[in-house]
Image 1 (cartoon, rainbow, N blue to C red):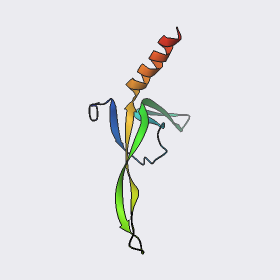
Image 2 (cartoon, rainbow, N blue to C red; image 1 turned 180 degrees about the vertical axis):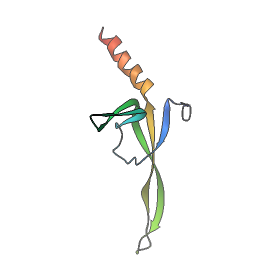
Image 3 (spheres, rainbow, N blue to C red; image 1 turned 120 degrees about the vertical axis):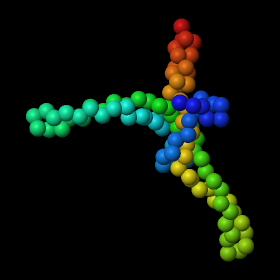
Length: 99
């Protein structure tokens, strides 16, 4: 996976809103399905891809009735995700410092 703007992050196109930071992002790797006693059994496998770190917004300017202008942020459903490899490095550095 490529880095976005030279940083170990990627952009996700999802319903990401302010306050979503820290939310995990998972990737579905496979879906194995089989029948057991006439019931469908699903074995889903997921991988942590990273953690949402920020959301993208655009700002629209609107005029109010009193002829004042105000900027209104609009969420566009894109977010930046810190890669899981960076999270692993952070965890490893904490473990090394504990020794």
